[in-house]
View 1 (cartoon, rainbow, N blue to C red):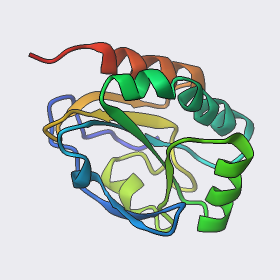
View 2: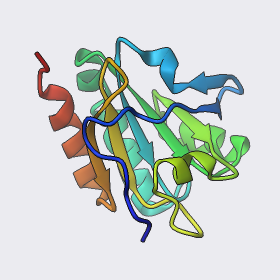
View 3: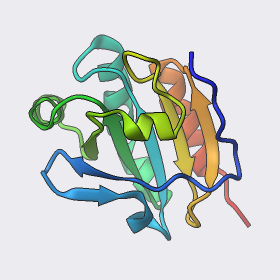
View 4: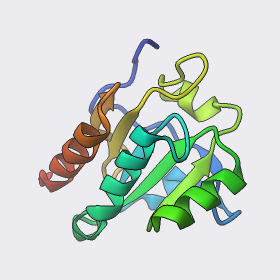
Length: 151
């Protein structure tokens, strides 16, 4: 298990990755909105499908909270496209083939991502940090975090 160094209130490390649509996605592009950045081990595995479909099912509520979701795994662009299409996911999946971003966030487990999520506030700071969570807990906790209004 990796050592988690990021804490609530820390600036979210910025990154740029290729999305399932082939375009580049940079975290800082979302300033002014909240972002759920979630890391998962493998496209279309049972737990990862549960987590992704949980975020899909809650996406209308996530959007109501001025937020978007970005899913990150080391899987290929083609794998992401198939996974997204198969499960009708309304959010982007990002390719972290060299696991650089997972390492930056402290969730690279040596051979795969540790299931986790980070909620980034409108200013780019971490509002929620959950590592080694169950798929269901991840979705529930991220939504709860988004519902907390920051003054």
